[in-house]
Length: 400
Image 1 (cartoon, rainbow, N blue to C red):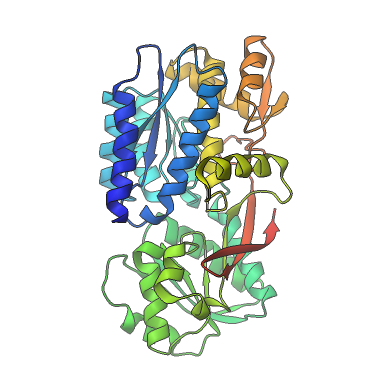
Image 2 (cartoon, one colour):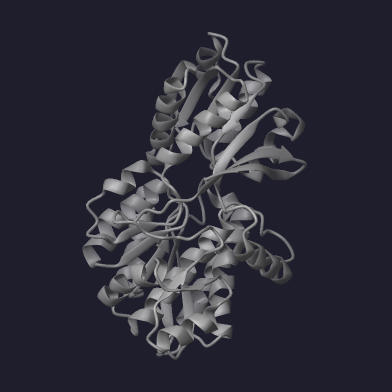
């Protein structure tokens, strides 16, 4: 049922672009609508739509309307390439937001957006390898690299008094990247890793791997994977086999699909890290109120702030460029994202539009943070620590 709903949502967005007027401006949305990240998608599509609604309700884009065009990258390399090819070469989008998974983001960038000279901004891709890609300054992201999240996770684990653990990680760009940075940081801080094993995503059983992971008596199991992929299955089979009772995860596991699969009681000693927004942020609070007023719920879901900010950055870069010219949009992106300039927030489209018209510099200060882009297209940011709270997750600490 979920895939049907998601497919309908994406189809509706695609249909909306088909009836766009000649003076409307397309923004490509390369989203992993189906596949292992599907359970994350509904609030993120809502967030992207909300950003576009803010643009269109407050003056529009380049004299017309902003229109989202969705491509389903399926959290896999070839579908991401195919979807990006359609967005760039058939839909002729001037900028691409996405993808979500690191692997699909990197595949689409290397094969399509970089050669075409199209800016691509991911709201969620965290693989450290993105920093050093030879991208011609075309690939950006608004979440911190897993080089940072891995180090934060190591500190969180040791702060919990866990000095001996096992690690299993999915064999893709995301899993390999964060597992390596976590392991290095944890061992440097004095922790012991009894087993460090990669796994493939689409197996029916991980019981033999789990037996190996548990044999030296670790205090907990770190699972770096997507909950709707291998993650929930590994946790469930570990519990069923009596092999582990405490689990530690990153953003891929911070998914309500995990709670539905194993139950909140089984996760009461577990904890998770994930990119988040600054504490006591007025920008984030304002966006969350608007989001929940519009959709009734969901503002607290992972990456809602980052998706909204990324769509707004794309729209602001187009407005600053004064056209849908891809090179001009590239040249405008850092101008609207970085200081100096007059600060504009998530709900300030009309103000930002007027400042641009008046020839003044702006600096977008997003719901997810400042979103300043460095020379590698990366940004600094915040990592939150989360615990299971009923049917959802509760943030208990933020690390900058």
